[in-house]
Length: 82
Image (cartoon, rainbow, N blue to C red):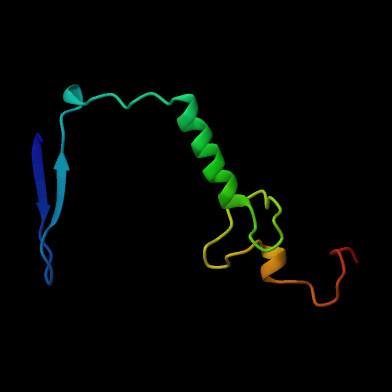
């Protein structure tokens, strides 16, 4: 650690920021094929709806727990066309 900055606050302890020297930083471990496959599998699981088992094409929000069509089904049963 090269330096520590503190910003005082009124009701709580100070905010602390630690500054590190860039020239002493260690490079990140390279991505291995197994790690890349594990990340792809985890991201696919985040996109898969647990109710309908389809890939939603986006990360399903934790607040809904399912894809948007499953969370808010169309009461009229139409496909969205007018």
